[in-house]
Image (cartoon, rainbow, N blue to C red; front, side, top):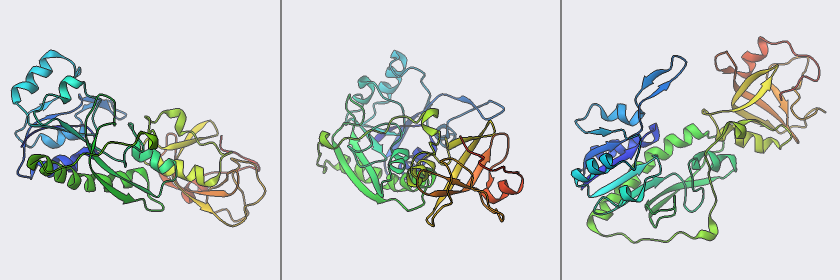
Length: 310
C-alpha cells in the first residue's frame, strides 16, 4: 500500500524503519518543523526528519495542518493509508484523506491512558502492565475503534526512557501486522469501553516537582516515570536537583521529617526521608553540574543536621 507516515520523536523511528523495509511504500513523511535545541539553540530537524533524509522520500513539515496547500500536497500523492506514530492532533480533513483511512499506534492499552504521555503516566501510577494499541483515528483524540492490541509487562525498575525504547520496537511489529490486515481486509474492529477510560495528559513542570510528604513508592514511581526527560526534581540550596533513579530502603529509617537528608557518621549515599520510608537517590544532577551517582554527589558536599530537599 501507498502510505503517508506521520511522526516526530525517536519513538516513531522503529515503525518508520519497519515500513521502509516492508513491501509497502512510504510515499511521504509528515513531521514537525525544525526547532532550536540545547544550550546553543542550534536549529535541528526532528528525529524522524533526520532519519528519513537518507531516503528519497518527501519530508513535509507543515506549521498549519489545516492549511489548504498542505491538504492539496497530500491529496496529490493519493495515499491509501495514513499512519500516525507520536504526532500532533490531525484535523479530520487530513485523517479522512487516505482511501483506507488513517491509523494510529498508541503506547497503552486503550481506553487506558488516552493522551500525550501514556508511558509516563503508566509508570507514575505504578502499573505493572501496559501495552500497545492500533486504531483508526476519529474526531475525538484516542477514541477510535481498536484494530490490534498487545499487552506488555513493565519491569520493576524500568524508567520511562527504557520502557519507551521497548515499546517502540514492539510497536513497529504490531503496526506492520495491522497494515497487512488492512491491506487484506482481514481485520475486525473493537469499540473502546468508555467506562474504562483513564487519561495521560501532557507532563508539565509543576508535575515534576517531588512532594516528599508522599510515600516512598509514589515518589519512586514519579522519578521512574519522568526519567530521563523531563526528570523529577527537588530544590537543594536554591538549585534544581534532578533525580533519575531512586531505590526504596525497606529497613526502618531514622526519625526524620519528610524531605530531610539522613546524615550518618559513615555517610556514603544520598538518602532522603519520604512520608513512610527513606529513598536512596542513585542518579542525580544538580543545576549547572553533570549527571552523577548519588555517592559522587555526597563526596563533594558538606551536610548539616536537618538539611532538606524542598
